[in-house]
Image 1 (cartoon, one colour):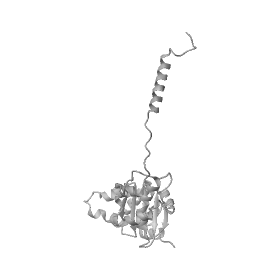
Image 2 (cartoon, one colour):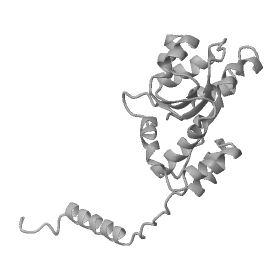
Image 3 (cartoon, helix red, strand yellow):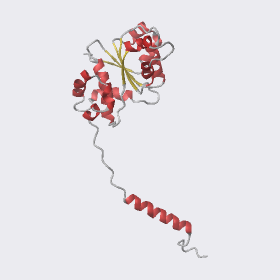
Length: 218
C-alpha cells in the first residue's frame, strides 16, 4: 500500500468534503444587520419605562437629552452586580433636593449607557407602602408588593424617613436584597447614624452596605 497519497482514504475524503461544505456555507452567509443605536426616545417608549410616573418624564428626558451625564457614571457602576460588592446606592438629602428624580433617572441612564435594548422595568415603591402592605393582605399571605420588593432585579425604595416598621417588612426587604446582591436604589431623609437611631444598627448596616450620595449638597 502506498503512503504517498491519502486520496483513497474514506475518512480524509469525508473531512475534505465537510470542510468544503462548511466554507461554502460561511461564504454564502448574509451580511450582519447593523442594529440602530439605543435612543432615549426608544427607551421611554418601551414597556420597561412604565415604572416612571408621567409627571417625571419631562425632567428625566431633559436630564438625559445629551446621553448619560458623567456625574451619574460612578452610581451606575456601583449598581452593576459584581463579586464582593453590595449594589446599593443610597441617595440622601432634604425634601425637594431631587432624590426621587435622580433615583427615577438612574435606571434609564444605566440602560442608555449600557446600550440595553431590552429594558427590564424596575420596581418603584414608597417605603410607606412596604410598611403598610401587610395590613391589606389576608392573614398568612405575603403581599405581592413585598415579594416583588424583595426579589425584583432592580428596586427603587423611595423616602425611607423613619417609618414605623412594626412588622419588620422594610428590614426584611433590605436584608434580602443585601444578602442576595440585588441592585437597589434607596432615597432617604437621613444618614447612617440617624437610620441606626430610628431602626437599629443592624438595619442601618444593611441599608448602607453600598455607597451613599448626597443630593443637593453645596
